[in-house]
Length: 190
Image (cartoon, rainbow, N blue to C red):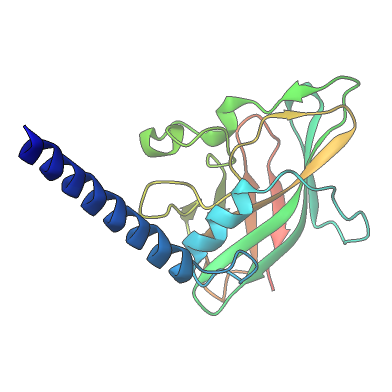
């Protein structure tokens, strides 16, 4: 019986030592939170876990789309990058006199996107000249590369949003932006 207690004690000590070693090693290897994200997926994860921030009203507005229940989407930038992406940024505003939940329909109806909560994953870009429709990009886990975790927006408040699409060809200078329940808007691309 004493041998059994000694074995249990040695096993417990071994497990505790390994746990401390793992915790100690992983604490040193974790990247600092203030480092910029290196990939679009990491950037997406960092962007969507932040609390909604007030919107800077001084930026130029490319288009304002009106939706249901007093929601408006103001698009303030449409930027192509060298990696072949087109990123839209803007603000989703509740213009009504009471707080409202962002409608679930804005995330679209794709099974993978539905699993990741309320988002703007149902948005599309239509290139009429090129006869193509572009959908919001997804990461390897099926999360849309757009603001997610949208909840209730207080009356007369707004939250910053972003959406990332494959970039249309450089020859495409105009696309139609569409989001469920919102009127479409034409965006000029540079």
